[in-house]
Image (cartoon, rainbow over all chains, first blue to last red; front, side, top):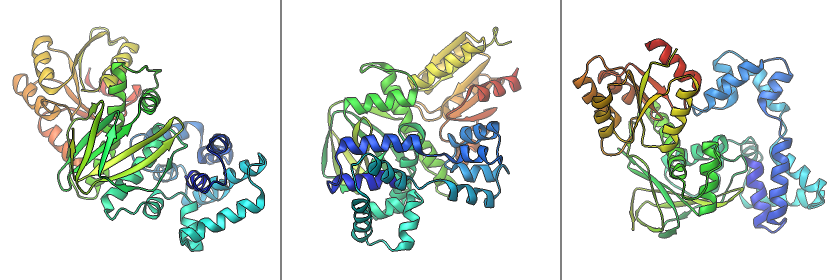
Length: 293
Length: 121
């Protein structure tokens, strides 16, 4: 995860081009050794145990290692050992960029130290960020004062990675004024707090997310496109409600909807968080109150 | 084993209904009806009297929990399984109180469905 953010930083600072970043992220994804593979390699877990943990990961918002420990497949010492073995993804990204000749070692070193300075990161904070703790990353990157939104966005990133695309980048959030949407999928969460949740996407990204989530090759206009994108948001919000319920906050939600061309206008507490996946950019919109017209 | 079984799938997502139907067909169950909201779920239950109902919770017009209540009022022996992404303790309690027999957390797998069916028939 940090690799993607650091990649985005390199892009924003013009160290590398978008095409170079995409190529490097694709290669980095292939090069990354997963904990499951390491666990099998070390003889700590069997392939059946790995797939059981993967199935559970689809339903509960927990990391592979946490579930494996709960099921007594791994001890915490074994997990620590495996995590230490797993290469840091930003190092893999750096390695690919240097191997391809897009960056020199000196440039990589310079970019890293500028990154730490720009975000005022201590060595300790930098370690947390490197480990890919999404809560810490969201707090660092997004100036959103609402703790519940931070939890929501952290979970959203994890669900994008789980269900859609592992090469996701987030950019700085901004307060919502008015946003024009060619497609808006949304769902209202009700209770205390009320949260409007929406995704603003162009046709290309809509089709990509719907196809990946459904596992079907869909075409624009198919009824399943609406069904799939809506179900993705519904599934994500369902997991969010379970997390909140586990913290003693019971919320409900309305059914999800998809609108074509429309405008989203903030009435109160609205934020926009831009995401980029392989097929393009889309926006997550969170607000207390909103008008869609 | 499931050839004689009739099933009603109630979910507002066309994707979920399609995937559910495919899964049921793959284990030999072809007698499948669909409802897109809670109101239609009640209507189709009365019309077809299916052996088993899979019911989403968050649906337009009428929620799955309300539809469940009406179906059980109409037929106290109805076998209704809730299949939802919102497996909060509040929803689980309410579903059981309203008469559901079981709860499947989405996304479900074929083995989840088979396990539930094997317990019911």
